[in-house]
Image (cartoon, rainbow, N blue to C red; front, side, top):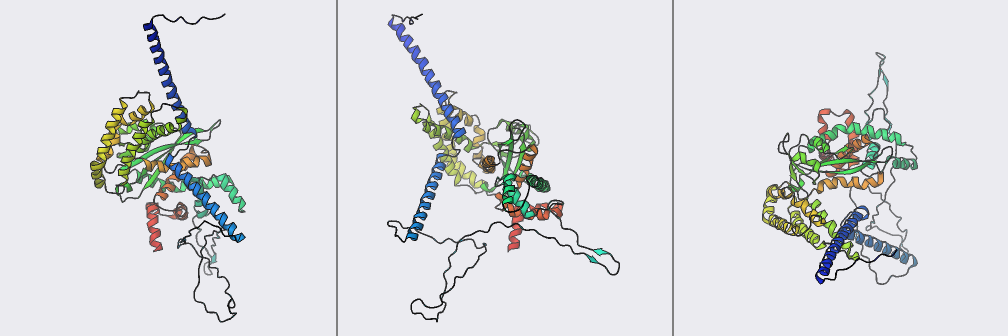
Length: 525
């Protein structure tokens, strides 16, 4: 059965009104479509796009091109030398590389000529030598250490005397401290799971099962726990902390579940502090607000973090032992605008009417503030505060006024409006750095402490259990603190594991990375 079209009114005014209503509905539908397309593009970028910014991607691309050009030049030069064919139009500038003095040298003296190649004379006298250095490597060597305890018999009383057995890092264990340190650093710093390490040992002729290595890892974590507790107490004695968290897949029966690794970083170097930096980690099976409340139960200072709602209870005025001062992260706020500007640039081919100019202008204002802040990094709190009040405060006030002006023009559902609201609802937290020279502009110290975990997830895939996550938190506390103090984690852990069993419990602070580094420098001197 055929259907008839809707009758149109004959009146011109009625037609105009119907046309205006139709255009309004169409405009609303188009706006909704553009909004949904923008959200889809943003979600695709988060899932599949590169995590770094365009400048970093450009640097990576240029480095890759440079690598390819250098490799091609080396291949062409090698082929030309082999074929004795001169290469035209190419000049390669080589510079002498000075290798570190602490590397051992193996001297190979090539045989001198027995006679003069010109006249055939045999009266040759050495007048000098030319040395060409090449960097080489010897594969790691596994060896067995024999601890010999000789027995002696007394001829007078017929008693047997023997020196006591040495302490081992693991009771009744057969693995030496250097081997244990290598396994721990490879697992928690280099992200090599124990099954891959076991396969590598097998290729080198030593059978170390995964279960045996796992026992060693658990025993080492238990032995090193007192040091991690010392670092924890030291971190929470700071005036200012950086806090953040990241996801950790945890093995479960049906599928992996999502746990959390939290970090709190003490780093006074940005405001000229003399105390060494340190980081402490915690594991939790979820992201409940009770976890940071438990972590920071005895802390009352400045906390630089994102706007996670689980931290809100820490900022309450009636909190015991006192409220924690909130300091927001400008880098986190900038990222929200940058993502919108980046999505807008990718969406031009689809002719989306996105609001990228506003997001792009916001990023430029952020960058101007960050540029001034970089110039005062490392100065004292008083010097930083003076520069901020003179140079940075006007830019911040202008930026906030501009945000309020632009926000008034946007719908509350707009993506850029939500980015504006993120800052405008927390103006006090974002501007607190203008009145305290100890506060940093960003929370990058905590994000850097979690970067290795984010990269390592692709290698070790998941944590074996909640207890495995807690062991990882202990080991990450030790390894990351060593890295922050420019200490080789493997050398430090090797020495600590060799000494901690018979070390005085009231002198454990001497084994902390910064004290250990000073002691090793004194020994070297």
